[in-house]
Length: 425
Ligand code: HGY
Ligand code: MN
Ligand code: MN
Image (cartoon, rainbow, N blue to C red; front, top):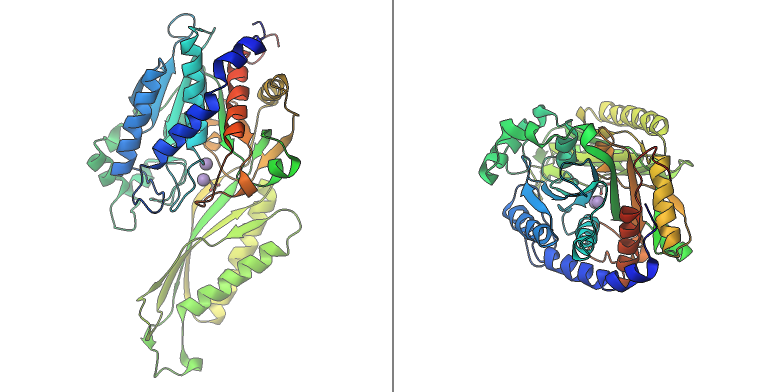
């Protein structure tokens, strides 16, 4: 395939960045509350956002529909109907009090790239599909990558029984949303339908900004282990139970949490550990907490390192519980292996970045992404876009319009110059 003419392409997509930023802001307005951006799986905000994204996909010349788990799926046919596709995408759910770029930047950029192809009447020797995943963050049901696992055919039916903080099961939430929980298998795609999966995403770290680079090539996506911990002691009167007789679940959890932090802080190989959620019961000022639930998120550059660290942390928590006469329940709620990006795809991302005049820099992703599920049916690659201060999962998350435009130009160049694996490069 001939290299796209940079000048003609330049004329075509100079306003890509502006369009993308405008849509990021429009999508960000769809939130559980106006004060804090929160858009959770199978909520009314999910439905409103899906309808808007489907409209944008159709306006870009794609056939678009909601799939069996609530992903938005758009398809832009190639030179003839029914060709295998280059799949692009990202997620459109958010964490609580989120930034507006994590997920939507990749999805909106992909839609804008297809719209640019459509505007020019450009048809390629493959189809281009854009998938917006409905639940990458795993906020509502602890388990994560639900949308991409459904597409990859690896959705585990047992999670349908998982309950949210209001006691609503995923099964019931799907029914309330208008989907059939026994029909999720229909979202699965065959590996033969995909030539590759490529996701553009904000870096969510400070490396590109430190190097003054707008874009980067992702080498691998770090694996992660999530655990749910529960400590049970003995609730009691805050005024009458002497300290030596207490079995305080909250102080026990506090010792565990500091132990996790200290263990990870003193590790020298990139281990990170986070306790992002804690809930003490019964939760009254004058009652010694009898039970505490908290979450643990452990990540490391390699799976072996992460697994050894998880085993060590579990042992330390068990010792604390034993010494404090607390009952411990500890369950792994989510585990993802480290996923390497395919060298043949990384080369094409690098070539697109270089063709757009950017220095090529390769870096790992400490954050998880839907490519961790898509790897089961396709080779994956990622394009990182610089974000201010590396801030993410925070309302101050920000991408400059010039960087949004740079990411779009690289993704568009990658699409138009894409060679399926093994084809002459
Ligand atoms: O947790 C993660 O790394 C991703 O943002 N879901
Ligand atoms: Mn995220
Ligand atoms: Mn993300």
